[in-house]
Image (cartoon, rainbow, N blue to C red):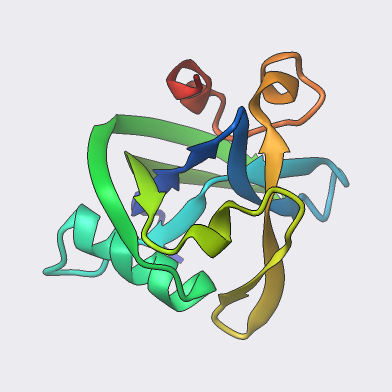
Length: 142
């Protein structure tokens, strides 16, 4: 299998000192991590369009006030395999206020996998209690 760089768009959404994330786990190390929602950028699609499509597909949410923050180069190991992503990072808000319920878990559909999106305190990311990946996202937290 050829190695390649995966272009993705991720959305940083903040509300009352919290950030919206999904949870993952490395199957080999059992390490738990958290990540902003988003996903792959398709050929011929802008990164902002990919972000809007991913939020619509994953949690049926429409975004507004989308602001480009920058590109992050992310090289990491997951499940014993070296990975490389170029992340187009955006700050955004939800159109529907129902997504700002901090105690709510939102159904997250990624392909054939069903999971949850939820809010975690940004301060606990900065103290290391929650491991937000990639760490190069941390400077963008308020």
